[in-house]
Image (cartoon, rainbow, N blue to C red; front, side, top):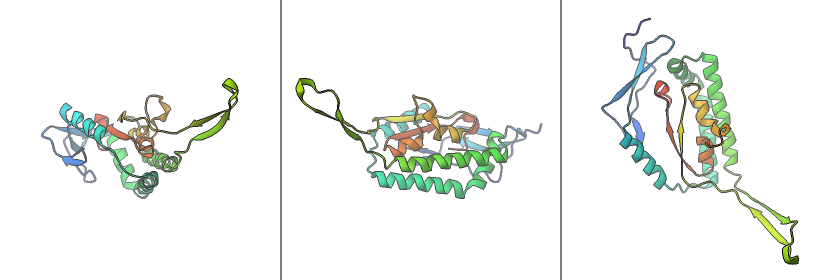
Length: 200
């Protein structure tokens, strides 16, 4: 197997995105195609201090977008994923070894999740109903309200289908997808797997 370092022409190295700004770091991480063993690019390596700073920024950040604006952002994300499915699936296959068909499916599914979340962003309604229990002979009115938990969602994505996992994490009760976090006006940090770090 040929393992001579070689950067793929389709791979564009990017700086870290921390606290809303781009940052470069001296430490880097080589990314390899698991199918050929060839290096496809290099990504910057964040430090523990970088992670803490990003978390503190996310914790202090208070978005002022309305639910309609959040819905439009999520819908736009779904449209962009569909429009760029070919180049994006090329990169997925390149860094994770997935077949082109599987890569396309992954992106399509993630786009579907973002589209679903765009509708969920508009559903912040609650329920109001009469209570059957009437203590002291008085009728009671019960009201439920949808309200996101305050805080920061930290998503650590695995190697297998990392794009899918970050969008479909509702299957685990302790985690919520970044798409769902956006629809609920929560903040989300994503830490990619080291072996699939291009898809940030």
